[in-house]
Amino acid sequence: MKLSRRAFIEGAASLAAAGLLGSQVLADGEAPAAEGPGSAEGPGGEGDPGSAEGSGGGGPMMQSAGIEDPNWREAPNPDDFEIAGEYDCDVLVLGCGYAGSACMRKAAVMGKKVIGVDQQFEEFYNVFGGDVGIINSQVQKGFGIPEVDPVEYMNNWQMCCANRAEPDLLKYFAYHSGEAFDFYVEPIGEEGRAKLQPLTWEGIPEEWNSQLGAFHTYPGAISIKIYGSSQVPLDNIHDACDNYGAQMLWGHVAEVLLKDEEGRVTGAIVCNQDDDCYYKINASVGVVVGCGDFSANTTMFKELIPEIMESNPNTESPSGNGRTGMGQKLCYWAGGAFEIGPRAGMGGVSGNPMGVWQGTHILLLDKDGYRFCNEAFAHNFVAGIPAQRRESGLCSVWGSNFRDTVARMPVGHLNLGDFTQLEKDAAIFNADAEDSGPDGFTYGRTTVYCAHDLATLASYCGYEGEAAEQFVASVERYNELAAAGVDADYGKPSEVLFPIEPPYFAAYSGMGGGAGVLVTLAGMFTDRNCQVRAQKTFKPIPGLFAIGNCCGGRFPLQYTSPINGVSIAWAITSGYQAGEYLGSL
Ligand SMILES: Cc1cc2nc3c(=O)[nH]c(=O)nc-3n(C[C@H](O)[C@H](O)[C@H](O)COP(=O)(O)OP(=O)(O)OC[C@H]3O[C@@H](n4cnc5c(N)ncnc54)[C@H](O)[C@@H]3O)c2cc1C
Image 1 (cartoon, rainbow, N blue to C red):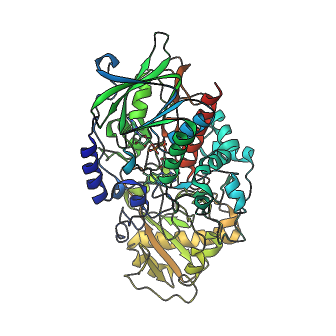
Image 2: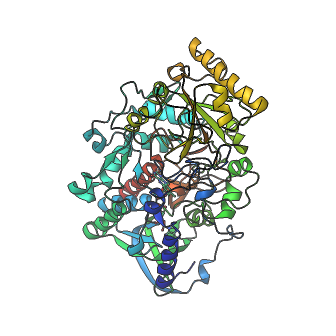
Image 3: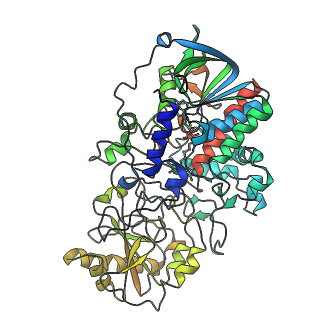
């Protein structure tokens, strides 16, 4: 796609006006006000941009219009481009977001002549989000955040994704993500590092424990937002150029990869949006593709992510808030294989009932008043089939003793980013709380109801007849199980199974609807060095590497998130990993 600087500036202005340009606008933006009980777009719903990572479910309110791209599988012919000039390098990095900027600087520091290319112009450069879920970095150690056992981390990750993550990529992440992050924040200097902030660390309750049931989660992801999410990758690019001889081509769009007769990827053709001319870039060591995800490409989304599509049968034009899939197309056109399905997006299929404590594991009832799952399974996701009860939204129910349950909430995507909230909550949801009446009261973006008996609470929530009776029976049954200390019905861990004590509280937790995601997470099938495997043979294609959301094998089933911000953490780590490998050749 050609886009002049002028057109880009105008486009950027209109996107900014629509509140759709970039992480700061989205992540800090306000979600629409809560709808009433039973609404599919309930309070703080799936698309809640105020949550720790902006959003993870991506309900319709967050969905931006995607592009239709019916011919995306058809590769352009490199011979059709009129070439105005050529560049030479060792390592070519196409797309310099989180992953690309890390790759560019690592390969340059290791002595390679690197060219970075990004379609964005430097003055409008923007990446999404800024919470980074690495483990064992020096930065985290400096905050006193406990070390994580990489072996436990790997097994936990594989349990969350049914052992379908690429083990060597996971191993690299478990052992090197901290090192990659420390490298990545070097260029921001001491002053910059002083602005890094740990999430889910201040006020962490004494009773909090990494393990809940069979799963672990980890506190202390690092937010780079105060320093500036886009500034950190920019500082990496500048450092690579100013101190390690790299060259950056801003406002250049990668159009197609080049291959020699032996099938080796040897470079790319890019379009300079300033002069509208095409340039050939030759790379003697490798071409790394880091052009982000394909959530803004409706056609690719529909074809490549069947699970999200099948979970959302009424969604015709799925899209998210990320990129348009050019990276995956470049690799596919060069013969690269996609990772094996079902393939994940950040949300879209799992239910993320978002209430007062976001996705935490308080009691959930469906529209007929039935409990239906272990609310604490695999941390905050009520994953898979149970979550498809989204037709009506879900009702969360808790009592004045909420803290017993919530203080043990797993951390991660779509759970509380700040435990200090619990102190404020204790002043609201306590034994002295008064009946709210049928209008309830507003808590943040959530409408909460309070009553001193369950039948009244059910009626405030809009339950009638048999559903209201079932609502009461379900809470009573839950309380019996909790008193016995074993959830014989659904297997919720006993550490977070407490009888709900009056006064009772409830809120509708919208399940969103539609296949909206923040980004897609599916990419190319790669080997241990992020080298793209070929279609049919699955042999690594010489010279071709995929990083960040262009690299598959990281999130095979859903956005596995044992710590906040693990998507950016993987992006930075995979860029660093490919840069290190190419730097060593
Ligand atoms: C609103 C929002 C908030 C989020 N918050 C978080 C969070 O806090 N923590 C977290 O872990 N994840 C978060 N995510 C997800 C996260 O941002 C992405 O998963 C991550 O950015 C992926 O990094 P990447 O390097 O693969 O892609 P990107 O960071 O998207 O970088 C891709 C780059 O490629 C460039 N590009 C694309 N096509 C071309 C082309 N043809 N030629 C040249 N350049 C090209 C783009 O301009 C861009 O600079 C969020 C996502 C959204 C939408």
